[in-house]
Length: 421
Image (cartoon, rainbow, N blue to C red; front, top):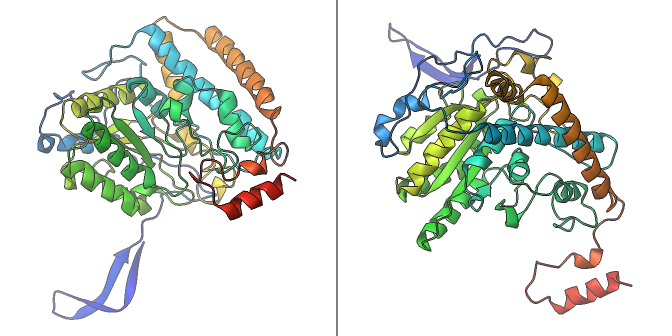
């Protein structure tokens, strides 16, 4: 859509002036229409895996292409195909499936009033899980609110995650965080912030401190396509480029913010990976529903950072299959069934089919695993709910000042004591 700006006039060929115009990006489909993603053109050029010391000015094509490993035949091919054995692939599949089943149970818990809010990562599981497996266990993660797969892949307790969602008496955050804003220092998982974008500059600063101390741990951060329009994201890119910081800057382009499509944040004009070019950083665009491609590109960026070549921006091209959150109704801004039309498919299904093609999996084994993990989530859910749900067995009010003040002021001591009576 183009619009006229009142009072402004531009020049014509005859020298006359006419009203100026500006452009308002619009999605191709609206609610009530049939899903149509035919305008999405997936690059077909096969991009070779470059050396990690390749100068960033020779990597521009990677910001506009698409790194893929799995083909339509579910086979891995090309320079980017990682050396993962069947056990590692099965572990990746297990973690993705467990993340999805965890999401499903917690959304049902929200719908039945056991918690106030929940956010799923349906369709994006390959990103968090593959990247968790590519990173070292003690590398620091600065996630947004759709990377719960990082915790699952790192073997973190489902009960602990659920208690944080329920804000119950076993909630390690003592009820201070919004549900899904997980925090797990022991798992290298920085507390999620509802103020989007803050985690990007925090990750850069943390990685600078790690390098300054001579540590070996690097940092990785995740933002959505909409958050790339936030100032904090651009501050992070500036510092990462200027100081050649060992950090991974991941942009999860899942096509939709809460109610606006990715074109509003600039995705219509160019790719989000291309943002890196203006800052002097390499940008790689990756098929975010291809577990192997995500793992391989992340390993490349990690190796580049550890070798002293600085940060990399990864655009992980995927689709938010579920609603933005339990408070969102996507039927108000996108056509029904659009997720099923996504040309890059479902990440869980693609890895499953890859293992089947290798002769290392079957539909029967997958059904058995689904049943096993469903039971695991169910058992964890019962244990978490034994500590309370929304409005029942909440954290002790007397803990409200714990971990806030080093020395608690006298007036707050009195208030805390009053709560104990």
